[in-house]
Length: 110
Image 1 (cartoon, rainbow, N blue to C red):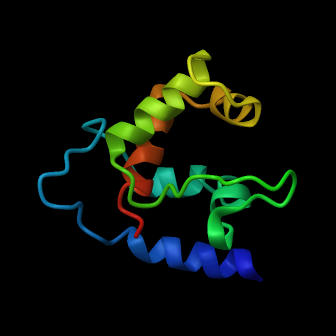
Image 2: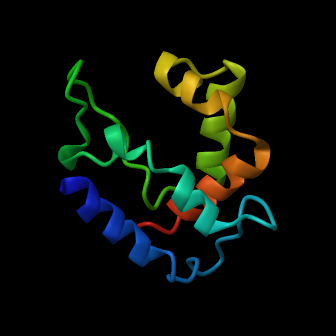
């Protein structure tokens, strides 16, 4: 039931306008597609207090991060310059467009 609450809250952010002066990471980024792609992200990043259950470690808050930061982080996980086995595995399936879409959505989540 908690996941539905998170999903509903995230869905409400889709209509929010980007912050003043914030440029999308990719000109044709789709926040709607980003919303759909971030479903599995909620398993770790959507937990209250941003703590993963096993092992118990801090996971960063993604909502509201800059689109550029999110693109850079996902790309670094994808190409192995940023190390985290789960994030590397998650990012492997994303195209450059997917990453831009994810960043467009998450950068507008409050």
